Each structure stands twice: as structure tokens, then as C-alpha cells.
Image (tube, rainbow, N blue to C red; front, side, top):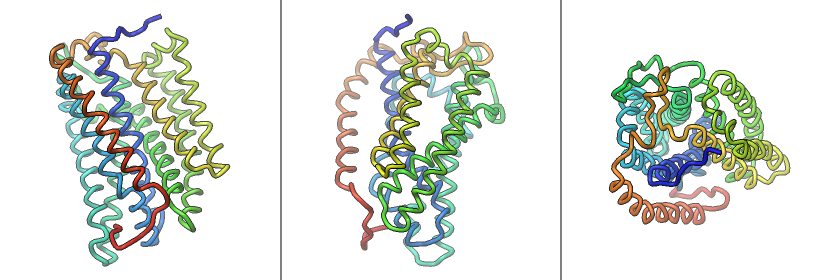
Amino acid sequence: MNVPHLDLNTIWFALVGVLFTGYAMLDGFDLGIGALHLFTKDDAERRVMLNAIGPVWDGNEVWLVTGGGALFAAFPNVYATVFSGFYLAFMLLLASLIFRAVAIEFRSKQPMYWWRQTWDISFAAGSVLSSLLIGVALGNLAWGIPIDERGEFAGSFLGLLKPYPLLIGITTVALFMMHGAIYGAMKTEGHLHHKLRRWAMNCIIAFVICAVTTTMATLLYVPHIAARVRENPWLFSIALANMLAIANIPREFHYRRDWLAFLSSCGAIITLMLLFGVNQFPNLVYSQPDPAHSLTIYNAASSQKTLGIMLIIAIIGIPIVLAYTVSIYWIFRGKVKMDRMSY
């Protein structure tokens, strides 16, 4: 069996994966709430949905910033190639995240309908576009992008919009909408709670359809992404865990155990990211059509001294981020209660 050797490069590959997985799991439901925002027309209900994520959304984005910083420190060549190749896509992602954040803060500053409607549209559009672009980026990393012998991106923006990455983008939107609807149902009560439960069931169905379609497309058209699982049958346990987590979501939701359904949704995201990482290893950016030009955890990494120093910093910093995240969720646990400080 091909078992990875545990060295600093492998450790940093895992750490970067953990940080981006944390972002997908935590900010995923924020983006899902945003994607569902315009489905309700009532101003009070929109405010409740905003306040469901209000205390935590900015803290959730810390995981994205930390993941990007870790990628830059540990694998600078990957950071340079990906950010230069995906430059326009990343600018669109940053713009959508900025408009989403500004919309949350500005929406309730004025009572006029046109003002609130403008920011509501910005919030929803930014959330959907962010989710789509994140999925498209992951889809391109799985499919492979053209890299020349110098390790530089040799394609175009339109070349990134292939059917498979777009399918991953749509699946990501469906996943985050399901994740957000379940979180919203968990945090609300009354008429909005029942409405979110209906939306959640529809989102679960949509995600399952997308997940099955994506799995078939991956096995048929991207065989290299499942090569490691084929070579090491014991890794199929991760795929099995993913299927069980997805299957448990509608089961727990049907029995109105919203918290357990949300945990199952988190489990689905974790196992999906784990499958992606396991099958991608040791590649960070797979080169297509010439795999020999791929950027790996070895040819794109910083020096061993840098990786060692950064690991010490990570050992100190990551527990602080975890403690902050856990404390915020504990403090703001329970159903949303509106007061004069609410959005």
C-alpha cells in the first residue's frame, strides 16, 4: 500500500487542508443562508436570517484568511501559480465576499425599502457567486490546469470554465444551501422555522442529485482523482463514511433532530474534503495535459527551515483560533432573539 511518509511537507499539506475544510464547514452555512435570503419576502424574517449568522460570520472567514496565509508560507509556488492563473476568478471572489460582508453591516442602517432591497440582492448574489467560484476552483484543481515547465499557468480564464469544474461549482452551491437551510432551521422558530425546514428538504434532494451526478462524472472523466482509493482499498472507508453522513442528513432532519442533521452535514463536508485531499496527494496543482509539470508538496514548498518555524507558529496559533470559534458558538447558542443591537 502507498502510505504517505510523514514529513514536514506532508504535515503542511494536511494543515492547509484542515484550515480550508474548517472554512468550508463554517462559512459554508453562512453562504447557504445568503443564497436562500431572497426566498423570503418578509423584512422581519430576513433580519432573523441575518442575525442567525451575525455573531459568527466574520469569525468563520478567519479560517479562509488563515488557510491562504498558510498556503503562501508553506507552498509559495502554488500560491503564485494559482493566484496568477485564477486572477480574475479570485478578484470576483473577493468582490463577492466584500459585497456580502458590507451588505450584512449596511442593510439595516436605513429603513427605506429600496435601500434594504439593494443590500439584500448584494448579500444573496455575493453568497451564490462566492460558493460557485469556490467550487469551480476546486473543480479545476481536480481536473487539472495547463502548467508549463517553469511551473507557470499557461491557460486562460475561459479555459477554466469547463463542464466538470462548473458541475463542481453547482454542487458546491447546492451543498452550502443545504448546510445553510439546516443551520437556519436549527437557529429559528415559528413560521420561518417551518419555512426553512421545507427549503432544507428541497436542498437536500438537490444536493444528493448533484453529488450522484458529480461522482459519476468524476469516475468517468477524471479517473486520476480516484486513483489512490483504487490503489489502497482501505481508503474506501472515507467514501463510505461520506455516503453514510449524506444519508443520515434527511434521516435526522425527518425526526426533527436538527442539530444532528447539521452535524451530519458537517461530516459530509469533512469527508468530501478528505477524499479530495487524499486523491490529490502529493499534488497541490495537477497539470493537464502534462502531469510531469504538476506542482507537488515537494517541488513547490518552502525550505525545511521555513516549514519547521511555521509549524511552531501553527501549533501555537491554531488552538487559539479553535478556542475563539468554540467560545463564540457557545456564547451565541440557541434560537435567534431580536433586540435593539440586532442587524
